[in-house]
Length: 113
Image 1: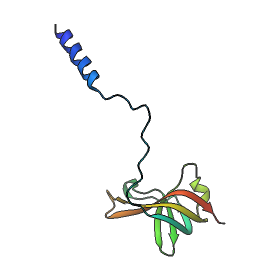
Image 2: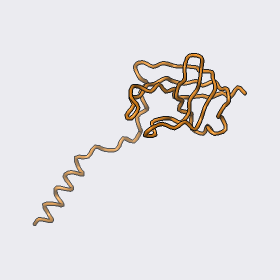
Image 3: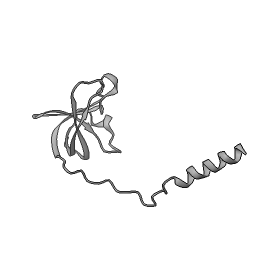
C-alpha cells in the first residue's frame, strides 16, 4: 500500500512538470545598452584576488577596462598588441573586489599590429 502511494505521488509530480519548450527562446535585447569601440594596448594573463577578472585588459587614453574576448580568440598571442575591440560595455558588482567592474564584452576584435 505504501509503495502504491509513493508511486502515485511520483506520477502526480511528473504530470505537473512543465513541458519542455521545443524551441528555445531567443535572448531578448535589453532595454538599454552601451555599444563601444576601444583602441589600445591589450594585456593578457591578468590575475585578481578570488579570480575576479576576465584576465584581459585594454589600456586606452580614456582608461583601462577589462575585456571578455569572443570565443576562439587566442588571448596569449594578443598580449602587448594594439587592437580595436568592438562590443557592449557592462558593469558587474565585485564580490571580493569592492565596487563595480567595467567590462567590455567584445563581439569583434581587430589586431592592428
